[in-house]
Length: 207
Ligand SMILES: Nc1ncnc2c1ncn2[C@@H]1O[C@H](COP(=O)(O)OP(=O)(O)OP(=O)(O)O)[C@@H](O)[C@H]1O
Ligand SMILES: [Mg+2]
Image (cartoon, rainbow, N blue to C red; front, side, top):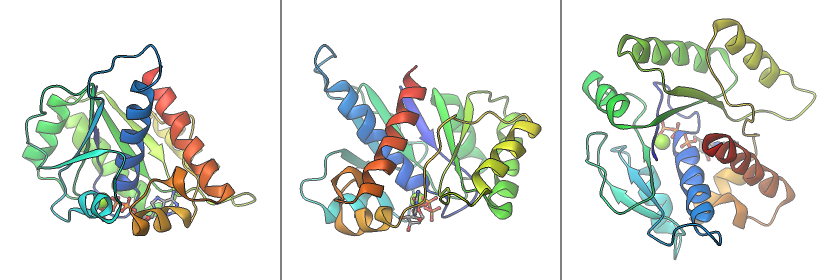
């Protein structure tokens, strides 16, 4: 599967999502009974190189990361590729991603500015005739905050498809990026729960 993680807004968790979905797919592929061919490749197509820098800080980083751009052809030999993209893809880049990817994951935090940008992203994808996109709500604050529920209601009313599971907000993600590890390696309960959020989304993707 070829997955692009994209959206017009910065800071909504695109890179964090690309890293953790790639890890999920890699671990899934490594399970007994699954193919032993190389599993997941993360393509860092953001000129900021956030994913590459994250990986460089860790040794060894558990996922193979390749530097590219949104039009870089997908190398052969991987079961899955996940492409991390810049916040403002050009119309040509968006078109290429929509054409070549099986799935477009649109991370979005539950706030007005991110939802506004999400609508612009969805409109642009619809103009391209793309239907294979789905929103992933990220940075969901803990109960009793209702921002996540309100964002879900908004998406439902707008008829925009979204994953049933969302990603909770935890500072453990910043710590993971700083230490060059994935969230499951951070020894905190909330980090383990956040990893289970990505696992649940990964299962939705593969179901
Ligand atoms: N679920 C989360 N909870 C808390 N912090 C998060 C979460 N997801 C991402 N972050 C943090 O939010 C910041 C932005 O995340 P990230 O870099 O993944 O976003 P992005 O959409 O890729 O941004 P950009 O468009 O600038 O590349 C980072 O500091 C990251 O650690
Ligand atoms: Mg990023």
